[in-house]
Length: 184
Image (cartoon, rainbow, N blue to C red):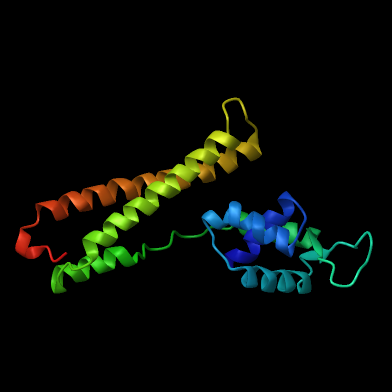
């Protein structure tokens, strides 16, 4: 149920066409709630049918013109209801952790190399988040909306920092395994 709420959030921040929304989604909300362009377009249709959003009238109607959408009162009310509702945290599901558990039984072939690859990917993502933080949240830029947006970014930074630390530790553990137990 979260994708429609992610779209409502993005549209409340700025009314957009589907194409503009997918581009913005890729640069912000998509960092923590991913969706394909097709899923976004499908949800726009559903949200419009439910009366949560509407297509804005075109200034110069033309065939094939992209529609821009805005959130209606019912959509804002739904987003406020969803935001205020309680939700339990989701249990951790991570394929790498499961693969490590399996490697303890069947051998470690390929795992160490993939741990290194994951470490590089998390380091790259952390660098991107830190660049966004420096660009979009300089000292002195304050206000409730900015503080909450920065808090979301900080969660991403902390998440990537955790994985970098954990992967570094995992690779140190691999280095200490006896050679006959390391199948790389």
